[in-house]
Length: 217
Image (cartoon, rainbow, N blue to C red; front, side, top):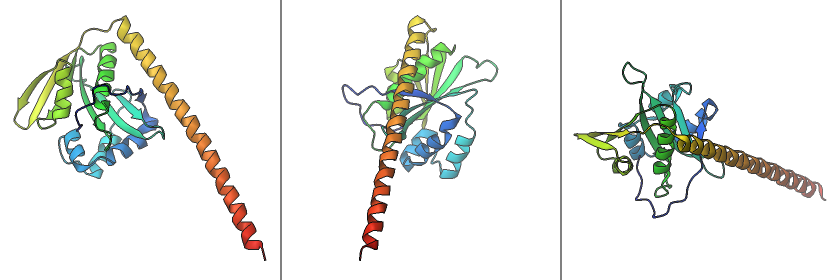
């Protein structure tokens, strides 16, 4: 993830969970990332085929994905909360995030991280881990701001954030945040559908007008 320094009061985004139906949008978002952002997100200069394999392996039954949509329902920021299921790691999860080009400084990465932290707490995760390149200053800044311990090992860094247990506030807060995000999503979908109908009506009118012009002597 790369990001410019966030503004002093970034607008709060509505973040909703993603499911298998959003896979095409997730892939479209990742493929639109510039080479530099791909490098920072995955830790290597991922090409299109590698991104395709990553998306194909997403497990929505195990992990969680969160997204921010713009007014046209384009997925502009995505977070992946991956639960570690190996022996002795059942209470650990790993976080990764990407923000679309041209959207720096809006605090999307920070807000997705906060959303993932709440969800992880509510699902029994006691430690959140971030593996990032040491040059990924934006991601490491988010981790340090949350109180994570960051250990650097050459070109790579690992941030570990100890999470408190879930409480009433975290559970209700997540339910409200998800409800608002889903309502916003459906409203945007309705507006987009209405726009499509209006555009179709205009196209029909233009077609009828052209046909009339062509038949005039």
